Image (cartoon, rainbow, N blue to C red):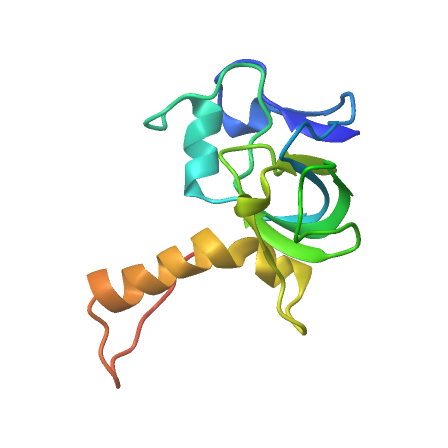
Length: 148
């Protein structure tokens, strides 16, 4: 499978897309074929080794993802191959497949695109919180976004 692989902490433009072995789910895990993954501020910090925790090298970055369940360990119930899910993990979403525990995913609501689902749980809600709670934006006020 193809995956973004960080072999040493460095600027984000030095990471590479590589061919690695396809991940296999172990007991209590599911494998999701990733259709969309978001990239947020945390991912940039992790790649450079500047986040509050460091992933063991080498690692595949990416926290948020959306996709279709591809394989389920025999001891997992409530989730089946073919289900559309959105999820979050400590890392690993910037790959064709990700293996996570079932608690890391939620069933995607009908009508939600893979792209929107991949950014919803962390990036979207963080921005919403920042604007509403920390920025104290009120009805009628205007906001200029200089980059997105």
